[in-house]
Length: 202
Length: 252
Image 1 (cartoon, each protein chain N blue to C red):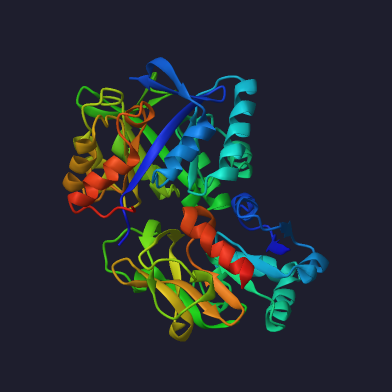
Image 2 (image 1 turned 90 degrees about the horizontal axis):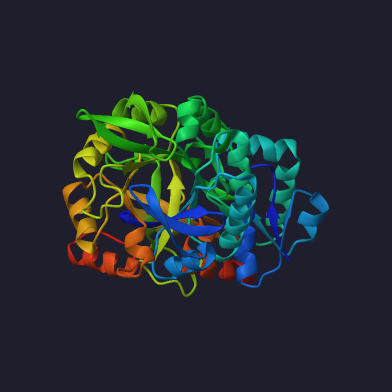
């Protein structure tokens, strides 16, 4: 059973539908016991980093997720959920993340050429870096759907794919049992479903 | 680099897809769920569901259709039509919409955009504007193109973006349903005025119109299409192939 962590951030309908479509049982839950029972965890998220990190802490899920991941349970962060995996974010101030993957989250404006629109919204192509379980069988150059204004930097040893937008943006990462996608696999058509399927086998 | 998006737009009334010519003479086309699945399979980058229902019963049918679509189609879904309050945002987001487009609702209550952007994020809020030339001035119309608001369009769109709208759909009433090509002059004025993605709507009549759109206006991010696609004369794949052949970056 896959546990989609519900901490009051973002719309979980599509993630749930995606797992249903690939025949993987999942549950949307904020209940610590259920999260502990789940075989693997998805950390979703949209919105602001500080607000999301705060909600995780207040609900007591911050330490629980850390604990489960450190015990080796497969965990995948999506979009803001991926950013939360890093040590810190510089979105409106400086905020601590879970620190499961070394690196920090910075505005894409520091990376991309001036004049490009922010947020980076739309379909962009994956360029592979390190090999990753969640990208198994996915063709290099496949397009996935992004919506974000911040991205992870300083995480090169764990970067599994990047995407080009007037500069290279971190698209996905993996460190052992902990993976993350900056893009939305649940909105990336068949490629996205294949990535979710890979995570279900991780 | 990011691709140009082709977005089929499904006007939905009482749970069925329709499309008007200049907003008049609406004709029934097909089932929204089937059409959505077909478009997604044939390469659509995103879908817009526009609810043109007036009744509560029709609205209920719409949300059922939306939820059913969101359960089987895994590309971004934008919903518009009848969005007047934050409760309306909530209603469609719970049924699987990713973005919500506001038009008349924002004209009636200009705080709607900023309140929605604060609650759901800028990426979720799309300002959709129906614009027509009145004495040579780009003017915003409300209620599906029926009411002249007297507002100058560029100023209105810029203001909405300032308040948090993350994307703009520009629908030219002057070219809508005529199928003689997009309104390049109007699109240029809007895409020069804002820094968020601009989606062109109204006027696509053939594949070449999309090529002209993106070659002439590289700052336009996406093209919306309805009747040209619904009657099966042209497919999303045809449009994308023509764009790729002309050197426009698309997802194939």
